[in-house]
Length: 432
Image 1 (cartoon, rainbow, N blue to C red):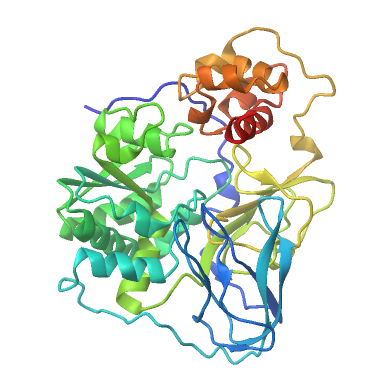
Image 2: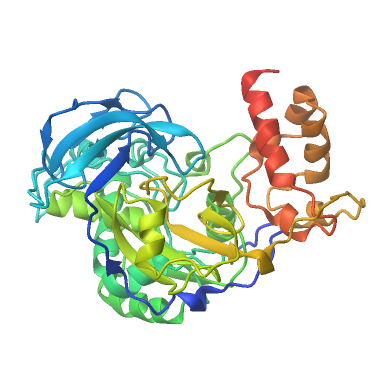
């Protein structure tokens, strides 16, 4: 019997805007800026210099430790290695390539039509060299996550619980075989007792496709879950599927689990079987501020503005452009930021969706506590963050916050709780 997770909310899905649009390929522009940080950890060191000729698939950045290499999404000439806008709101070192239009491909990865003869170490090395990260937005290097040894439960996360986003949904509807094969490769590494694809019940077409495909893959179980946000968060999904709770400050491996986004699984297959690193991804470009909401298959390094134009452009009266969904996404200062491996959506909201208050105030209703899926007390985290009290923030386990936004969504006083918690986390990291 599956256990439920604490808290959670039921925001309007708005997925109908883009759900029935298969991923439309977008041609690479005349110039791409490839950020050297597309993963949790330090930025890559550039492996190329101005004037170098590069080929599509060539590694152009790498490093040691917590790092995932980046590759050229086009062939052409390096014209700059310089800071460029990043979706996280900072300026990040990037390799700027002038596209020669030839699309000449070269990769150090070797394709393996039969993966059964490859060892776990060989598969992990292939995943690392392909630069695969968590493509649901977390961007944790996949090779590191896959290096934990045997697990009891391997979960492919296809919940996609954020409103508006349909990138994973259409991936399953158009390329389920690839995702399943990638999951089986991860299973070859982790040797789980149980392998599960978890999906919410608001994706009828994708569920039907998976049920049909998995008839011939009996070792993979399909778990269709009631729609509830943030069910796709790693710790909550583990609790739902296994009944186990990841301890405070702990990791999924502490309860014998490993969770990978379904798009990450597809990237694993493309790397190991086809020998192609991460050069592109599906991005949902949607929201009332976009003229033609749709899913796009875009090269890494395309700017937000170019992706929005490929979806018909802006409608006007734009309030906010988000990298990601309206619950956890980050507002963009401009549209010159480059799409990275972790950008699964660009959501454009208009003034009609502006829920901010001129004078936000806590009314002590406790609703934020009731909906917090981590069992925290957001009102106190907000208060002590504003006070700069890092010691008390530690006491109230601020680092356990997954920044899902349930507290801010339900707050009648319209407090910017998540923004304050992010500031509080930074205080704790800095030891202030």
